[in-house]
Image 1 (tube, rainbow, N blue to C red):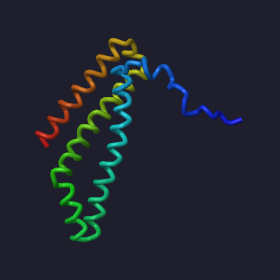
Image 2 (spheres, rainbow, N blue to C red):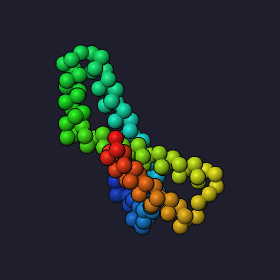
Image 3 (cartoon, rainbow, N blue to C red):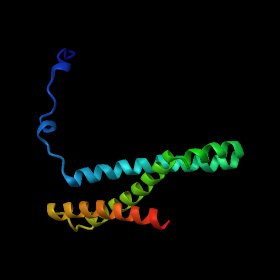
Image 4 (cartoon, helix red, strand yellow):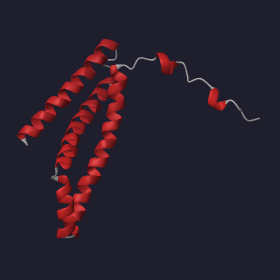
Length: 127
């Protein structure tokens, strides 16, 4: 028989008492940054296809990618690229059985965030 009180059920108790941890948040952001890199890759593919299509299509795509919005997206892509790379390195370290205690894994998360920001700034300034 169907449950008629489906909408009146309380949420799971862990949702109200759970405190997000740095390691879980950085891991979730690694997944989000990977998806953002897919979208940025599609923008770059659009730019290449527009270049192969003709001057009008290329002018339109180039105008989008060189606008303030395009600069913001490409800057975010560089940040996502570095963050995702350092997240992958952190997971490789964990897979080898190192830095698995709470304090060391939180330190690795902090290092990952700081390194991603510093490398993004370095990349944007140098390149």
